[in-house]
Length: 213
Image (cartoon, rainbow, N blue to C red):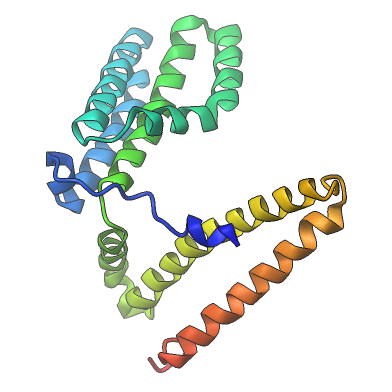
């Protein structure tokens, strides 16, 4: 299925200063973006508008400094466009245009900052970072390596399922069955179960599914 072609992470290789920044610093900057966007409105509306606008501009600049394509930036906005328009309309109606912009700018800044962080960080590095965050919980029985493996499997499986949906939808449309729920869902279920079994067998073959490992 074409779903296998979607098993490519969002990481965009590069040698920009953003790519070379350690993951810990990226996490700090991402946290800083979130804190500024959430805390600035508590001071005043005017301060919130200025701060969120500056933060959003800085994130966009970071996006292009990292050498990421503009199409990726637009794609991230496009996914949220209807959601953003609804929020902006409600906030404008309730609190005015400046508050509406402040809320939308804060959402865009945090989402785009996350996008820059994941695009400039290799998946293995992200997983190692997650394992490091969970490691202090090992004294309570948590398994950092198993946790990072679970996240890796999730990152690998979701694109496959989305790709399977796309394949089945195109095949059903080609046969004139785009309105047939069974024709559009059953092949996806079969492909997903087969993929899950193959993944489980691969893990078991390497002894990664055993509780004692």
